[in-house]
Amino acid sequence: MLFWKGLPEDVPGWNDHSERKAHLDKLFDRLSLDTSGTISRGAGRVIVNGDLETLLDLPGVAREPLVDHGLQFIRRKSVSCVSYFIVNHSADPISAWTAIGSPCRSALLMDPMTARTGVPPIRWERGRVEVYLQMQPGETRVLRMFPDKRVDGLAWPTWEPSSELIAVKGTWRVQFVEGGPVLPNDFSTGRLACWTELGNEEARRFAGAARYSINVNLPNSNADGWFLDLGDVRESARVWVNDHPAGGWLLLVFLAILAFMMVGWFSQVAGESEGGKYNDRVDMSFRWSMSWFIFSEVMFFAAFFGALYYARAIAMPWLGDLDHKAFLWPDFSAVWPNVGPAGTVEAFQTIGPWPIPTINTALLLSSGVTLTIAHHALKDNKRASLILWMVLTIALGVLFLGLQAYEYAHAYGDLNLKLSSGVFGSTFFMLTGFHGFHVTVGAIMLMAVLGRIIRGHFTPERHFAFEGAAWYWHFVDVVWFGLYVVVYWL
Image (cartoon, rainbow, N blue to C red):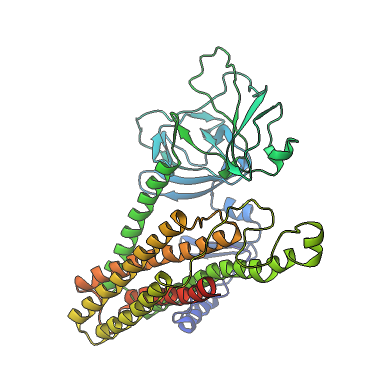
């Protein structure tokens, strides 16, 4: 056993801490280190040393040369192989022969993000096995080294440049697609940069989307493919495949993966709970986790309520004071709601509290009452009554969403009230839209709980999944009441 710098002074965790700490102290009282920091007992040794490399050399632990390339790893030895989880945390790509500390006859390389597998190139150099690794910053690989087994399969593809890098040079054509306040005229430039930096006054004030295009003549080459380096574009680029936008399809794919993971995870948690594997400590951890989650949601909505307050109580009077009216915006009137001082927002009408917002308020508050009645039915072990009140709660939530969808259609089609309708439109739709999303999530949670109730889950004493969903639903009720007063009445 190897200890770096010193023996442990305490035991981990608080369960039976005093007894385990006393046992540890009793064990150490029976041990005495010699001058080299070693304790020998039979065939075993306990070694304490402050120099990590010296400590690892004493029992013959092989140093991993992976770290010389800036790679980090976790190594695990099993019966048939040694497995490495390798990550490139450096800022530079890796493309080199990399020495591995474990000997092998063959190797298998896997990409955990794409499930791609293959046999990597390996060689023996200076008495050590080397594997050819190509990894971008942030990429991970799983490498399995087989000392006594030969692995056959498809070769892991490696990419080598067949010629010098080709700089994309020439004249870029910039075409403005959508946005405002007005679409600038298309122009050409020899420098690739954001349109706000290219000297065009109209483009400097433009916010929206533009298309950059250039023709590139590729040289004759037997290359298998070409890599196009666009630099650090992040979310400013849109993905197209064969002249069709692919972003929506990619979103659907990842949403399906997320739904699959969520269903699988919650199903496993429900099964473990019904199997009696959770004690009071786990129950407490669930309660604290849900409490902090709801607190984060409170702060989420606080940000949007704060934006609305700032726009109404600070920014609008400031834009309407004497200095700004006299020198910048003489026609601006500091009355809420407004279309802003620049005159770039189309006129719109607002939505009053009657009838739909008031009806929706009654629906959500009523759903809070029916959910509380359902909770009491669960604690009284009245299953039929519990299911009835749960169905009614979900129905009220779905009806709320239906009326809100109708309200949105009325706002866009009849009132010209849109997300682009200045600060009023943006805060109105962000607040009501995100609240509607939370109502949707809450309704899904209640449906999942209802399904478990129908299958006989929960007891009057242990039913936190129900309580957690109920907490979330009551939080949604409270947010709506504040939104109803601040947005529709004030």
